[in-house]
Length: 328
Ligand SMILES: [Zn+2]
Image 1: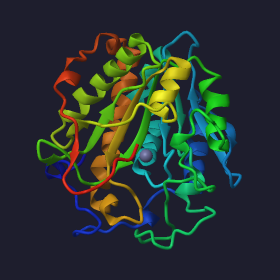
Image 2: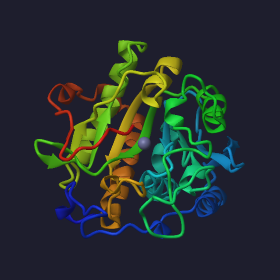
Image 3: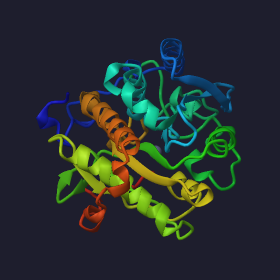
Image 4: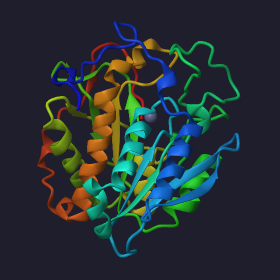
């Protein structure tokens, strides 16, 4: 567990922290881990849903115990430089094979798409990353190999990573809930205090109130579990209404109750205000694990159905302590 003094305030890269990308999973080591877990866990099926621009296989880790169960999808790393969400998600996949989490699997179907943008995560792209600042074996970038922000492609669906997700996951399963995991900059705050992350439901006008309420209930589970830890502090993300973004577009197109979770700090960037020192990795990885495991339990035992959404009415919208643009 992370030290209590970590509360949203780990060192930035440009303060006393450093960021070395070599401590992160590579695409290949992630695939090796998924393959190992697939061999160990009878409940887990590993499926290839398509290929990236550079030809890397894109994976779906699938736990389907009963098609009539409620189904939740976790999506990570549409933006290649936002990797701690994937690191935490790999831990959760390991836990699903252990006694700690195994019992829930009979009551829920779980779909995980980790590292949807592996070319960006590996810095294997058709543009220069020379001005990116993290040290280590590789740079990581937001964009895919074609220099496209794939989290703006959920309507046009021009990119192979987005086509794989829509054709072979979103259209192929009856999904009730989805959490789209990201990292934002390092300086977002509520009440003058840095946040460990911020959350938001779909804000497009193209979703039913029922779908939006489901998102708010899912957010309630995340808020209750993360904000109570002592090291987590969550704000309300300020995001747009365009359906090109997963949070909106996927809710509108498929009637899935989506939640955006933007965690603090990125693994690499050309702007040093966005990059968080790796001393913060522990609590941010833990925040991912807690988010996934608490929502898995709440969907499996049905408690998500009655979660109190009133906190959204008072949750402060985040602002930025220094000049910095929003991410999503
Ligand atoms: Zn992002």
